[in-house]
Length: 125
Image (cartoon, rainbow, N blue to C red; front, side, top):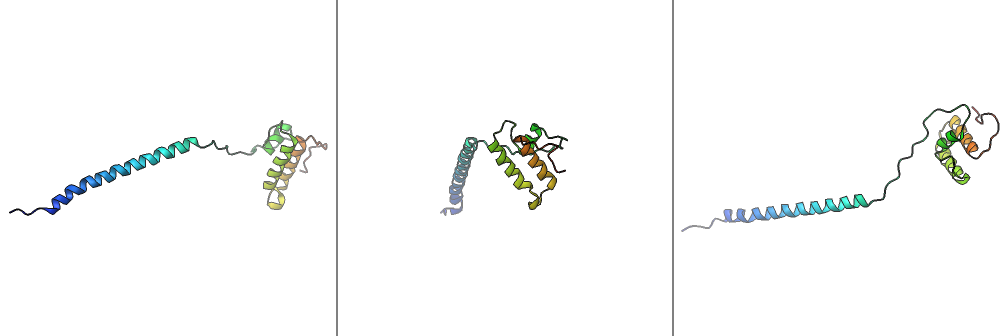
């Protein structure tokens, strides 16, 4: 008279269940990875981080230097120059903790780009 061994029957049924759960988890992880990769490839290209002019200043400001200070091209229209001047000036205004020297150079750059030459170097410094 043998008694049925419930413990061995249970372990025989649990092993395939655990294996099935592991396969399902791997399939879902693979599916998620593929979708994430496709979404990553389909995203629009991001704009590069704009770097500002890091060099020293020339004795007489040129259009090239003025364009570098304002972050525009030399052939930029006046409207864009004024917009760039405002953006750079807001970041460097003396009332907001910026330097008076930098503010005068930014203003001089705008004047050079808009061809408003006042004689001399144009800078207060």
